[in-house]
Length: 130
Image 1 (cartoon, rainbow, N blue to C red):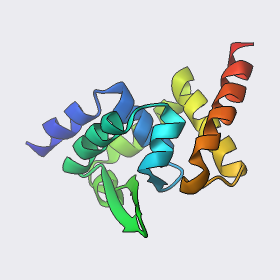
Image 2 (image 1 turned 180 degrees about the vertical axis):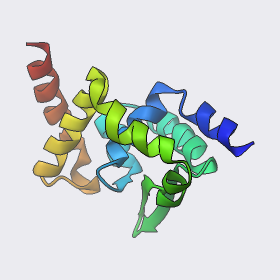
Image 3 (image 1 turned 120 degrees about the vertical axis):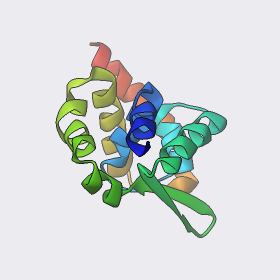
């Protein structure tokens, strides 16, 4: 049953964190890794699981692979949209991830300069601990 597989995919913190940052639009794998501070193999494993249940879809642009939310699946299973739109903003870790993403985008960083996100993360985490 498709719904069971989707629910299983939603039961992991890292996958929820990925879905959370993809709410703002497509991101390259390297951006996801940097923003969430996860290693490439971990990101790929979770993205593969999300892709297999059609929660995210990917496309290639030049040498980079980008991931975005699969709107068809979100429309088919409306409860997922409700979770993404109303529940994720209540979790501190997800708020922090969103703040890092916002600062990353404001700094106009791209895949080629993604290594600079570490400075943004340190700044955001320093503010959230105060």
